Length: 192
Image (cartoon, rainbow, N blue to C red; front, top):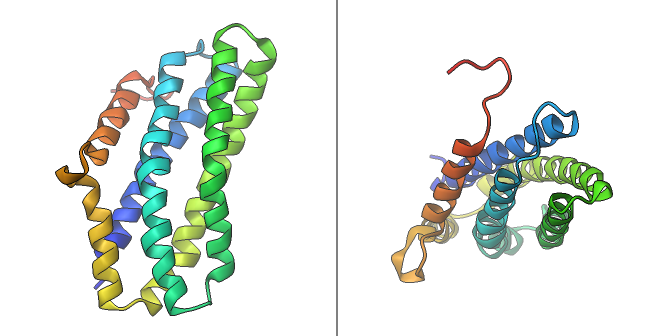
């Protein structure tokens, strides 16, 4: 039976991918002049990325999933090192996007172009990152980790909703996610 944490991680990746798709879609529409810049929606998307993947999802992968794999095998050391570096590099990339967005909103034409380019690069980088985790790391994890390892990892990923931790990150992320869906325009040609 597949460990629960694998499904949780994949579900979280799916939610992040949907937000990234929205960012890419909006950037392309705005860049091409098909829709005006929607700074509220762009800010909500960047807030989601900071509040959930960077603050809750990646630290759980680092501390529990990746650490457990490294204890059991060296087979994935190189890819885990790459993923850890990508987790570390993610926050500065988002901060750069936020700063460019502020400059863009304040009328800086250069920042407009830089924001669109940086957003496209960020989206592609994150999609590649999630593919590496799912295609290269998870198979190793399923092969080498014990039931006890999985019990700890499952518990860690479930604890995001533990009220003892104060705020409920999944609830906070879900509210941001729903706000993004409400603010986002329907894709062209889409009928509701």
